[in-house]
Image (cartoon, rainbow, N blue to C red; front, top):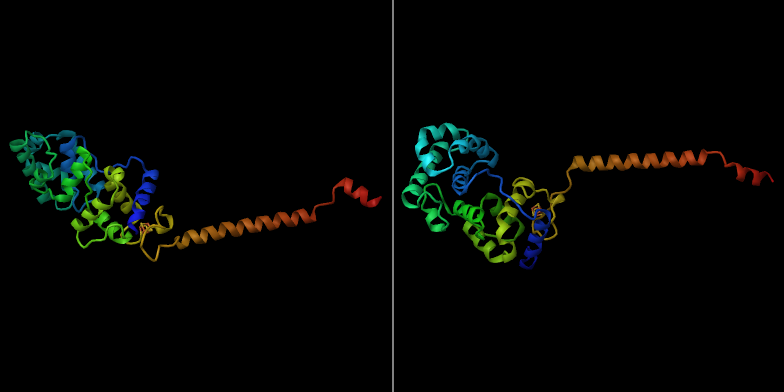
Length: 252
Ligand code: SF4
């Protein structure tokens, strides 16, 4: 992708979804932080299933510390790596109580000091909870950056720094969500849906995935049916008797 096409890339995603939203459920900045920590190598749907009942009873660091690691594990045991995640969530809750007056810090460095919180998690929290123009590079963004040619890089950090440099200010606030949703539903890992992609003409990826066979077959069947219908109508018209007035004129 040419750097000069990047604004148009975002503009089209913006037209389709002006206010993109993440898919993790949370009720405040603390539960957002917990949900993002739990979402590492897990699906948002799976995390939401577990955090629904959990956040009904636990929505502050104090309540989480009081719940304890053992009971937390019961809530999140359906999520991958739940043992280490439970340990991190209890650990970060205690640090928030002891060092941050139970408030999630806005600062990236302070967030990254919490157990289980890396650069990606900190960027997600800073973007969603505090509106910072950060871009968290997860597996979807890493793939899109490289595949489209928008921000090629060998590491997530390299892709992130290029995206930060190349994303126009007006699109920074929502860039993370536009890209993540584009990667999740269209520019998928195994086979991107290029045939229905709104930015296919701007993207470097080749060869583009064509319209699926089954849909081509259905489209052909529909046009065959339409052709048969048209031909039948034509035949019927040809066989139809000549209208009265014309018949009279011909006889005369
Ligand atoms: S054209 Fe294909 S590879 Fe390129 S962004 Fe769209 S879905 Fe992804």
